[in-house]
Image 1: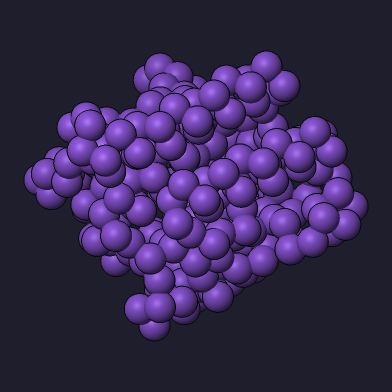
Image 2: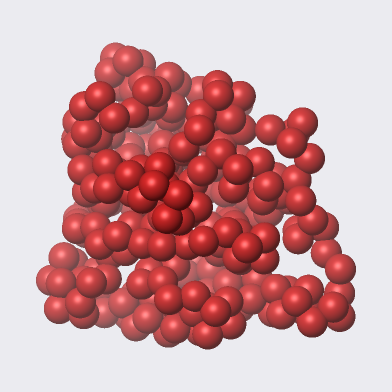
Length: 243
């Protein structure tokens, strides 16, 4: 759980994780200004606190590095803001264990009606649809939601993708999936109910524009790498010792 100011929603998210499915829950607190870390510790969650705010991507880097160090075979990332229904984690893990996919995403958009009725702002829905369509075309995938905050990875994916070289900002997510495609990992998704409410984290319009431009940049770098026009460290296998 990459966390920032999640005291109002953390416990509800944690309680939705299917009992007995997860061997350990790790929360990385990115210098929250509320009681997120204290609540996590009360719930028995392994809690790591950053000394300085590192951003959303930087938070995930710590999450994955710590999970690998603790011997995880499958790692699920879920935002602790209760936007995603964590009860579907069991289905995601099963798909990975069956070796059907290497990466499983929770798709918020089964239909347009459901997405909008859940509270997703219309402008965000349109941006998501446009970017996801472009990403599927460029990357040769058929994923319903490239921009979800509920994701599951096998250990091999996390040991191969050089995520430490990615941005510390929100575009980290896109960069990671682009790299996963580059390395030939199989990406699938499952429908996940989502909720939009005041306490659920969401970036504003201006940051969304930056994120969208960053996504286009990640796709362009993928194309340049695939065509052999530029060689980039972001597409070189990670050193397993870093993990």
